[in-house]
Length: 59
Image (cartoon, rainbow, N blue to C red; front, side):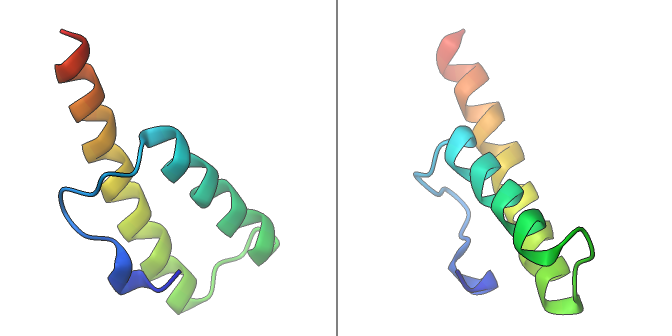
């Protein structure tokens, strides 16, 4: 996945994004390159938005 593929309003679930974050850490061996850090940061922002959306829907 390229860092630019993460877009606001994504339809990916928090669980899917969490798995992608975990996979990124596994692939990196626990030490992220500069490019991986950018990807990680975008995934975390998207994950946080998905969590907020899920909480709002549950309410």
